[in-house]
Image 1 (cartoon, rainbow, N blue to C red):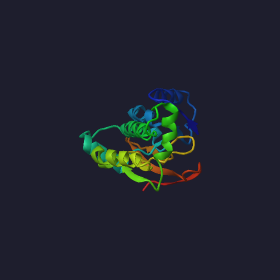
Image 2 (cartoon, helix red, strand yellow):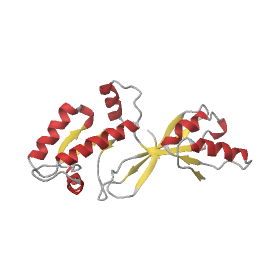
Image 3 (cartoon, one colour):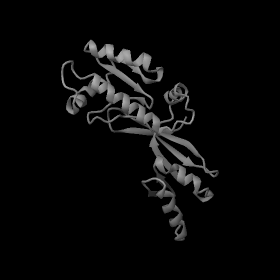
Image 4 (cartoon, rainbow, N blue to C red):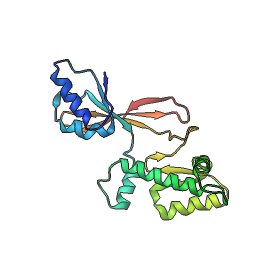
Length: 197
C-alpha cells in the first residue's frame, strides 16, 4: 500500500511512480484535495487501486445549503467552512453574559454546543430559525445540540468533532464512487467501516 498526502502534487508522484516500472501497489490512499488531480490523469490502470479517504461531507444538509444559497456546485468543503464559522460564532455567543469574549472563554463555552439534551439547533433549516433558537437558549443559561451542514457537531474532550469518514474509489472513467463509510463510536476513538449505502 502507498499513502500519499497532498494536493495536485499527488498526481505527479503517481505518474512518476509508474515510470519506474515498479508494480502498482494493491492500494494507493490519497486525500480529498488530491481527488481532482488524480482523476485528471485519466489512467485506467489506477481504477480500483486509488482510494481517497476524507470526511463524509456529501450530506443531506449540504444539499439544503446548496439550495438555500443557490449554489448547486458549492464544494463540499464549503460545509466545513460554514460549520466552523457558525460554531465559532455560537461559541462566542455562549460566553457567560458580562464576560469578555476572548479565546479561553470561547473555548470553554464550546461544551455548551454539543449537549444531546440541549435545545436542537439545525443549520439546515436556515439562520432565521436556528440563530434565535440558540440565542434564546444561551440567554436562559441552557445548552444546545448543534447539527451542522457536515452532520452532528459532537465536540470531544479535545475540542474536535467526532464525525464519519468516507472512502471513495477511483473508477475506470476517472470518477469517484463512495465505497465505504467509517462511523466512529463517539466519543470513543473506535469505530467501524461498512460498505457505503
